[in-house]
Every structure is written in structure tokens, then in C-alpha cells.
Image (cartoon, rainbow, N blue to C red):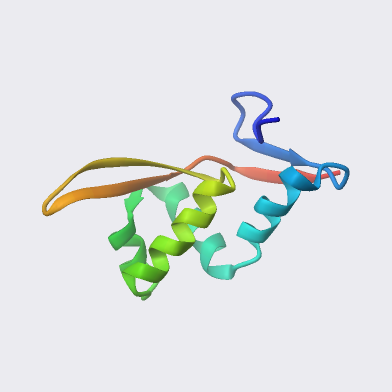
Length: 99
């Protein structure tokens, strides 16, 4: 079952569906990842920009972006960059609730 039931930017989770709940809860358990979502709510950013904004190594930022993407909390798309390709990240959700 998809995380998003409709096109709203809200995720409704339930303890009775741990396969949906656990990836989102794990992704939101890190203050760094929560801050990334907050920054992406202001504007889309690439991994390098996120790393710089949070004073993180690019490799650490990339690992955190991957976890957010896998949980369905952010969307990414590969775009041409100055040197090769870059991953542009954007916020997918505005709110999460659990029942």
C-alpha cells in the first residue's frame, strides 16, 4: 500500500501497519533529517547545498537524503550539473500523523 493515499502532502500512519510506520519513524528519528525536510520546505536543494547548509560532509548528507527518499518524505530527481549529474531534492510532505 502506498504511503500517500491521495495527492495531499500528508502521511497518516497507524500502529497496525508497521511496514508503513517504521521507515517513516526511522527517517524522522534524526534531527539532521528533520532539518533537511525543513530546509527543503523553503526551496529545493541539491545534496551539496544541503551538506553546506548543515555543515555536513557530502557523503553524510547523501546517506540521509537516501533514507528520507526511501521513506517517501522527499522526492529527488537527477539533473545535469556542472560536473556530471546532481540530485535535486524537494519536500514531499507537510505533515505526518499517527493513529
